Length: 147
Image (tube, rainbow, N blue to C red):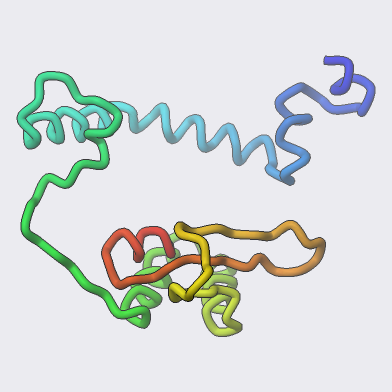
């Protein structure tokens, strides 16, 4: 509270969100939407539990595949189009930034010797776009990570 009052913030929430430039109304809208959709998520989890044939769903089960034997492959261009299509509901300005990231090659896509495993985004330099490092191998998980 001391920091909140000293810095002239309206609330501790506003103080916490301000450092990442997140408007309070955006945060509150997120909380409201999550709350409004908890029943839907609960139905999904119950369905997943039935499909996996388990009595108790554990955290690791949430990511367990429910369909076996399907090995989907995607070229990077296919993945790019899927990602660009998937961000359309977020608005045209978001889509333009995503398209620019692909066009201007902000993404180091393919595995190379000495490159760390996983995926990382570095956007710590002031007034410079983020750089994204990932190791794309054409799997569905790679498309999901790219998104």
